[in-house]
Image 1 (tube, helix red, strand yellow):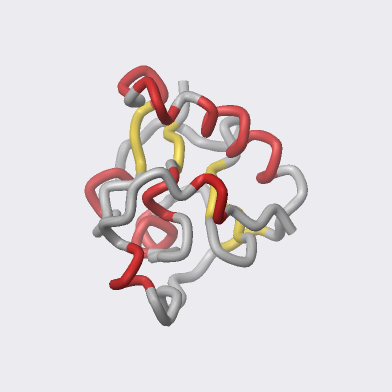
Image 2: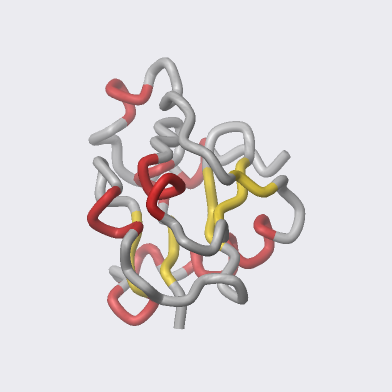
Length: 108
């Protein structure tokens, strides 16, 4: 089991979670970050660190967020590794409470 980044992270991209991860299992795209499930050690440090509550244990995902299991797995194989905290996206506050942002996800 691993932790999963969900759509609450899209267009926010806070990286507080990256700062606490002991195994550097986060990967970064243009407007989203993901967790590589094969590298995640299920320590749980990332979940409370996320200011927008975008990270869940895989077995606790809300039903509408289940597609993000595959999204995290696929994109973590394409995107570069992220090992240090960065500033959130410029409009992170604007998007923090927006729901159903999957259509905004940039997979490049």
